[in-house]
Amino acid sequence: MKILAWSYIAALVAVTLAHLNLQAALGNPFNMYRAGALCVAGMLARLAYPQSPSFTCLLMIGSVSVLGFSHFVANGSYGSPMDIIVDMSGGLWGIAIGAVLSKLISPTSKRTALY
Image (cartoon, rainbow, N blue to C red; front, side):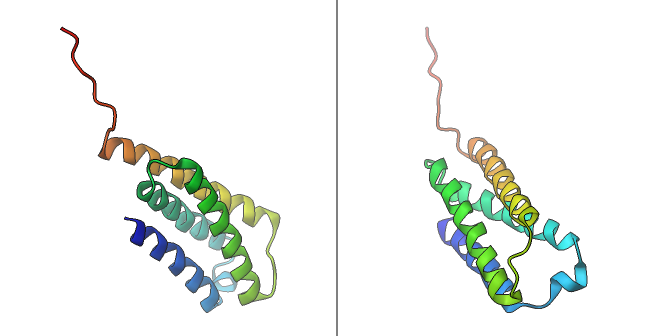
């Protein structure tokens, strides 16, 4: 799962650096696609590191920062502060979804019957 999460984040950076001019073609919905992609990245990171939620939060902050820098390298502009807000909220929603899924997949607390 860790390899999948890191590969996905690397793929997001690679696609951003590829600069296929998607932002000009799609307009404002491009932010929603990027937020969705960061939501998936946050979910994968949380599933990969279920015991360290602080690391997954730092990983998403770093991912959004790297994606912002790669967007600057590809386009020559930093974007708007709203882009950062949308990206961070997408990553945090992904972390929350990943936390719920990790609890459903492998519940760590087992209750013992008191007889």
